[in-house]
Amino acid sequence: MKENNTNSTELNESNIPTKIYLSEDEMPKQWYNLRAFMKTKHAPFLNPGTMQPCTAEELEHVFCKELVSQELNQTDEMIDIPEGIREFYKMYRPSPLVRAYCLEKKLGTPAHIYYKMEGNNTSGSHKLNSAVAQAYYAKEEGLTSLTTETGAGQWGTALSMACSFYDLDLSVYMVKVSSEQKPYRKAVMQTYGANVIPSPSDTTTVGRKILAENPGTGGSLGCAISEAIEVALSKENCRYVLGSVLDHVVLHQSIIGQECKIALDKYGVKPDMIIGCAGGGSNLGGLIAPYMSDKINGKNNIDFIAVEPASCPSLTRGKFAYDFGDTGRTTPLMKMYTLGCGFMPSANHAGGLRYHGMSPILSQLYHDGYMRAVSVEQSAVFDAAVKFARCEGILPAPESAHAIRVAVDEALKCKETGEAKTILFGLTGTGYFDMAAYTKYLSGEMSDYIPTDEDLVPGFETLIYPEEK
Ligand SMILES: *Cc1c(COP(=O)(O)O)cnc(C)c1O
Image (tube, rainbow, N blue to C red; front, top):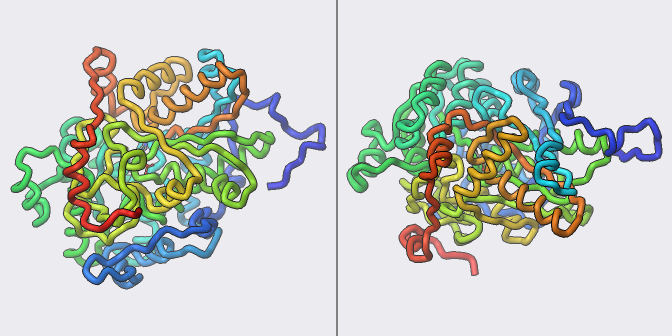
């Protein structure tokens, strides 16, 4: 984007509206393939049987062809968004970029705070950006059904919406504790026609095995993934889709960062800091994509921050190693920061952040020093969530509130130093289905759990491939 600050009629930072909207025409027509810009590509997926890099053919047993091709594409910098996907995007995008004037005032900070609001759709999160793309390609390939897992429920909801739009059958394995805590999430998915099964279940071999080994378990994302993959492999014209972690999901989420950059460039605003919560890493990867490629090329020195729960600290305390993406050890091996595929996260109200691993793209960028990571405790997160809701109006998802917490902390540091930093963070979704967690916080019953080093040992022991030295 060309800079144009010589023209006096040009928009500038002194007249920034509270919401910067883009028109439909300004919505990006291509996704931004961050991986193509990376100097060090992440290590390839390995087939655990042969320990050789996975071929496209192997991956196509599980995933749609086009998604496999995107997954393995490390050369094309930009990838076209098909018109059939843009049509759906236009129903809820471009999403607003908001200047948090009220929050700035409340904090008394000289910092300029912006957030990208991705909760403006029924799924209540950014996950729809990839769900739409994945369902579209499945339909194009002539598939008739999809399977997936969902933790907190946002991904399952997003995919239910996409599958009903493109007319595909969908089975969602929903982490059992979530399905019990969030009956209305389940009802929304059913409204869009999805078949929702609490996981672990007795409908799969791996589910029955996990139940036998951990009777009474509330389940985990890792278990639910194993079940969904098993069903996809055993059914004709059916594939599995995943809502985070993988490169093609990060690719689809790049629409977030591109829209931010188009909006901010209009006003000549350059972020000093970009903050996002990190579960599997897709929203953050998408948010930072166009800015990170500039950093890699020495064109900016933005401070990129991944925020994770102290109870599930894959970047801050995990190991950089080859690991499975699921508890049942059925996925290819991915080189990533991980707590071990057998890690059983403690109950934490940000369900979307309870995953043992991290996107290989983000893991590599973190390993190479292009970004940093911090972990935060959940009561501090809810404290920020409630403050934010009360002054900015939006009731954030607990996952998103991780980013809010750190944005607020950084803005308060600016207050001390007097620096007017520009902070951009991703507001990934709304928290209407998380009111049980809010209620717990408001009644003072929320506790923080930080695993000790010893607590992390059992998870690391399930890591069967050596850690990077
Ligand atoms: C799933 C989810 C996340 C975390 O997933 P990433 O892949 O790390 O982006 C964050 N926020 C919300 C609202 C979610 O639903």
